[in-house]
Amino acid sequence: MKFTPVVFIMKAVAAALEQMPRFNSSLSEDGQKLTLKKYINIGVAVDTPNGLVVPVFKDVNKKSITELSRELTTISKKARDGKLTAGEMQGGCFTISSIGGLGTTHFAPIVNAPEVAILGVSKSAMEPVWNGKEFVPRLMMPISLSFDHRVIDGADGARFITIINNMLSDIRRLVM
Image 1 (cartoon, one colour):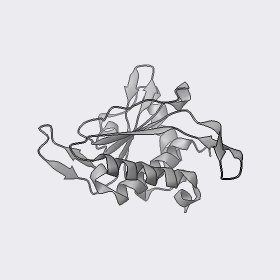
Image 2 (cartoon, helix red, strand yellow; image 1 turned 30 degrees about the vertical axis):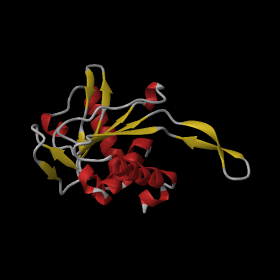
Image 3 (cartoon, rainbow, N blue to C red; image 1 turned 180 degrees about the vertical axis):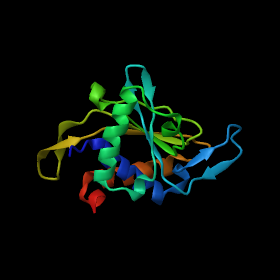
Image 4 (cartoon, rainbow, N blue to C red; image 1 turned 60 degrees about the horizontal axis):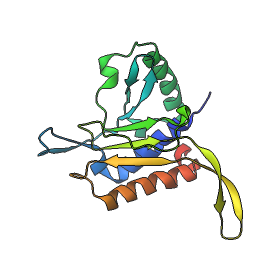
């Protein structure tokens, strides 16, 4: 079984959504009603020959890394083959857009309304990191969070991305 970074990111995002439920919500078109979701369904943007599509993975917080990996493989193939159903692209609470495979090192994703936040993932690279005594090589993955400031303030955005960073810095937390 092949595990891509995306499944670990999905689990880290699910953990962050559980801890900070305002990110797991939708805002009405007029901006007057916020609906907090009782489920964690995460959309993952997939590049296809016919353009970008966002299949939705249901109840990510309740699935294992292995289950998510299988589902991601199956759904991504369906997306590239143009065989996704409308139902497979509905019901998302939060979106992950990973363009690291295209070589991009940084970008600012745009929130997929009516969702209130999106995580952008760029290309990982080995970089020198100071550990207090010396520089050591460390795999670094740039991530960026865009969010609707009508719902989420900057401090909560920083807290949310810190949860994700902490989870991804030790993926053992995600597989237990």
